[in-house]
Image (cartoon, rainbow, N blue to C red; front, side, top):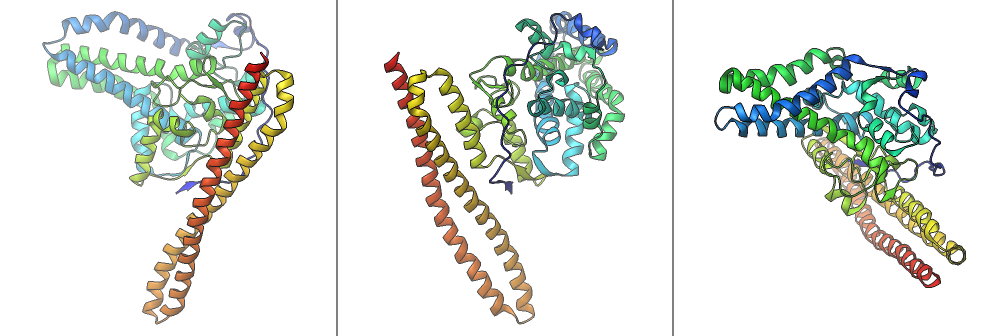
Length: 442
């Protein structure tokens, strides 16, 4: 069952772009940052070795073994991406499902090792801090901020990769995120992360390569595995950098943008503004393009179909409409001539309120339909039990009443859907007319 609340807390006003904190990377050391020589050395050396050894490995590989190498690299990168987006990100950091079953934890805690981006516990804690900045405005805490520096190239390099090379100053917020209630399996993976990642990313490909093609095969498959996690690194890091620096539609409460292009992170990059405006949604975007451009939601829906997760969270129709109308009003006002906007502002606000009201009505009927269906299932079970006790008549009447009410709610829900569509179309028609009015004035 998908949770569809009909109300949501009001978003704070869209903040202005925060002032840069630093002018150059050397300023970080004065603020308490220090280079993490272990991680920095590993990332730099692994990137250099992949660039140098990958072409060499393909040249010296046994006949036909290049196909195994390429398949392993792509499979490694895909597994790392899915484990990061579906598990570390949506299910753990954002708790997109109310109930994540033990087999899901066990499977994905193993698969997440291939991402080589820190334990699930540490990864999710950093991501929680990243999103908390949207509400608190304390952007100096954002571990991969795109607003810290006064030049775009510095912000890109920092958010994309350099942030991982540094020890960040301690903070109560990060400690709280790390100490948040976690599944015991997640804590166990955090404690044993280093030996586990060595097994997954080094011992496993070497052993498999040895079995397939001897020592040369072990070398080639190790290089292929290294190329896989390097690809996975940059694939994930683009969500931190690209989707906060470039795009078409800016979010209400963050610098995140919808870009509708970057499919690499399996959906995380395409509707990133939607995600920041409603992060607990198991989906990453609203509307039909959200479905088309979000492969990770198919993974989560598959997990639900298999009974591995239950109770998916998603934005209600009211919440979606609330976010979309505020964005559209903000963007339209910024592009409108003041004289035109003054004439249209009240009408646009009224049409937006009507859309929100229709959306809330739809949500209420949808929720009632779900509740009635649950009651009917329970009543059916009670009826069978009662029949055995010769009390079936009363239960049967109660069940008929519930079924009649559900049929009525279905009809009301159908009408509510039509009104919702009409109000939405009226709002967007007004936006189009307002655009034409601006063009006439210009």
